[in-house]
Amino acid sequence: MTSRTILSCKRFQVLFSKSLFLLKLSPIVCSMSFTKYQHNLVAVCQMTAKNNKDDNFQTSKKLIEEAASAGAKVVFLPEAFDFVGESKEETLKLAEPLDGPLLSKYKDIAKQCKVWLSLGGMHVKREESRLLSNCHLMINDLGDIIAAYNKVHLFDVDIPEKKIRLKESDMIEKGKDILPPVDSPVGKIGLAICYDLRFPELSLTQTAQGAQILTFPSAFTFATGAIHWEVLLRSRAIENQCYVVAAAQTGVHNKKRSSWGHAMVIDPSGTIIAQCSEGTGFALASIDLQSLQNIRTTMPVWQHRRNDLYPCLAPGRSPQDLTSPPHYQFGQVEVLASHVFYKTPTSFAFTNKCCVVPGHVLVASLRPVLKLTDLKPAEVADLFQTVQRVQSVMEKIHNTTSATVTVQDGPLAGQSIQHVHVHVLPRRPGDFPENDQIYHKLQNHDKGDMSKKWRSEEEMAAEAEILRKYFINEL
Image (cartoon, rainbow, N blue to C red; front, side):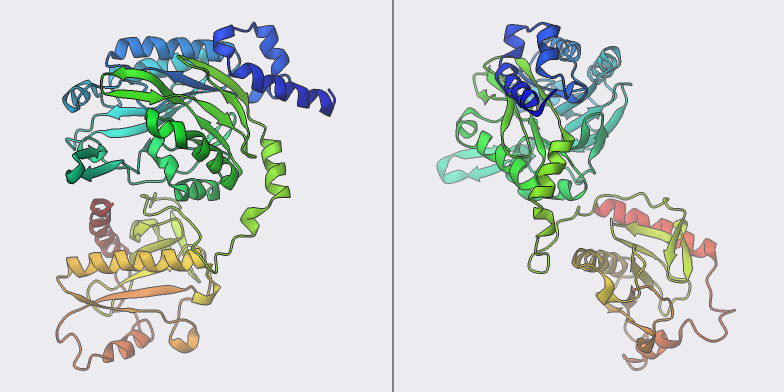
């Protein structure tokens, strides 16, 4: 196939994908339209969910089955695919937990159709809270939940003088994590939901983590959708050099609520390559990762960023797995995972083998470097944000309002472990006759005969276990 023919096929795809579900194109025509990239097909869906979960499931089931038959490897459903309630009370009543019967049906259909599903926003009931989660789920073709992202940006407006009150937080608890991109058959997918679209920092963070496809399953209102929907989606595609897949609710859900629709797929150059017409249906698009890479190579904006002038975006305080790796490199020694009580993508905090004062802990960079000046700007920011959190927790535990926070940056400054790290020492009245004596003590605390100074591994692990609970609660 020549490049001219391939280009023609891509144009053919754009024209036909808009009305694919209406025309019911035969498999032969679909094959002709997507010959080069058929193995990377995605289906973006559009529907009008109401307050009947069974009816909504039957609609979704038909879309999934037809999209899978057309060759889609991943099928994307919109926010509120499960239902759209007519009131807060009805919404709370209809919501289900993740182990409820509705999600089990979607897991089964994923297995039956051998297709991955992006379920773009389920109302999830949580035992520990009266509030729900708005949860974007990725399910693989074995019916397993691969990722569960809780919407982090909630739409809250309260203007009493205009009698306007729209507070998503009255019913939904905001998410706390930016998830790493999900490896799928069509590429690495970043998960978001609807209103998240208006916050480019989220998408930029996901792209920095490796995302190739950004998703914004939505139930955009008709008024805002008409003026902002396409503009925002194309902007996210262009600035991140990613594919954007945006499944959508459309039409009238009830007397109080209507959605804009216009589900679409946009390529990394900002071109709409597939879009749904009015009503329920789906559109197919091919994900060409080589084309994505070519765009990033010829327009290398990520290499041109001035992170010396503005921050490098990185995920915030998402909970990290403290048990992996089993040992952390700390200069010329190792720290056991059981001694680590808090970790971020680039820093970790752990209990100390030789404490100058009770509660003396350490914070270090995950990347083993000798000095503070060897860290990248994003690592410096994360290191000291971690120190802030650790200091706050240690002061709370030790019932004090003060702490000595210091870095021995290099051997002449007293550094004995060849790895940049920060000492956090809670302070109490009279802990030293002269306040600055703490620095002399710190200078010599790990030198000389240490046989009586080292704490046992069990003691350090026990302290870390206690501290972890404070950071889990903080998150």
